[in-house]
Image (cartoon, rainbow, N blue to C red; front, side, top):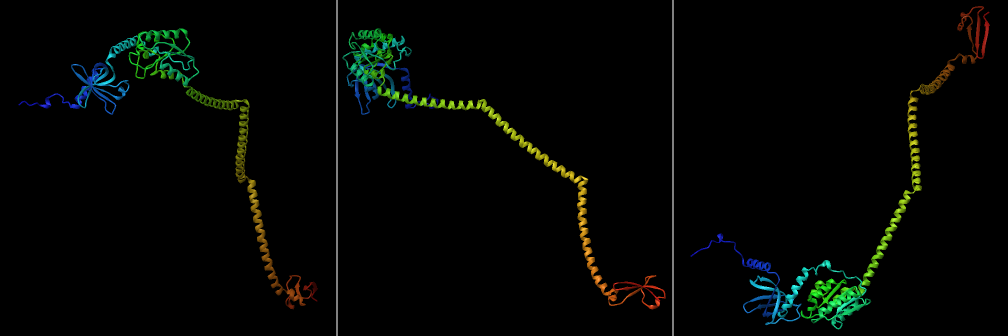
Length: 447
């Protein structure tokens, strides 16, 4: 039995990875394709998505059409229907089933028209008829609106109703034309040329109601596309329903999904316009108020700047500066004078401390002080002496001979030697004596 070494084999895939990469390969290789076949095994669950098989005599393929796309169809799908689908090739990874993701579906009888549509679309696109550079801008407020459509169809009633409701002051000129049948394309071209020749309107609405691909085919004719492209007046196409696309839509300056939508695009709503005007008015008032405020502020600033630059202000500033300088000078002068005075007082004090006059004055003051002190001492001493003298005098009075003299005694003194005689033997005849009495002296001679 043969064994396989897994480690030596090529890379091992998981089922999920295999299905995923297979899906990527299918989706990258096949772009959007058209396929024709018979519907079988149709199922429409509650989700709204459609699932069915598309088959021919030899094989079949699973298909899925999601709700977003199938709700655009105007008919229901049934088993046995022969259809033409526009789809992407893919793979349902969950079951590994090859399938088609259908984006558009129509009955198979339309296949030839669809091919012609795609061929013309490609040719006109390459010729530049679809380029945005050639698109003309719509007038914001059209003076007159031209409508190229059937005068008896529902489209003109819808357009007039919308215009009446939104902006009823704009005149409408109808350029009647056939919008269905073999002669319709020539009629549409003629109406567009008439509108351009007359120059009665400044915008044209090209419109008709919904219908099948065959019904809308006049708007897929090349002569209509070139008439739209060559028009000097901007054209809005409002053909069919929202899901319907015609060559006219691609060439027109603006495509509207319906005729009513085209009427809404061509004029503003009067209420919205009034509201816009009110908003613009409020905005303008705010801007004017802001501008006035800015101008006032600028005026105030200019006045202040002018006042600051005015010669009178300069003179006032210079005068104030001069006054401040004068005050500062006076303050500085007073300060310097005070400093000089203080220094002078200091120098005078130092000079007075060193001059002889001060020394003399100091000596005089000291002498006066000493004299006064000496006088006080002398007076005190004199007082003490007087007091002592008085005491001594009192004692002397007690011991004084005068007291004896007062009692009648006398003191005899020899004149020749002034000796006091105490004994009689001390005198001789002829000696002269002085007798001291209480109140005087008496001279006498010894006999």
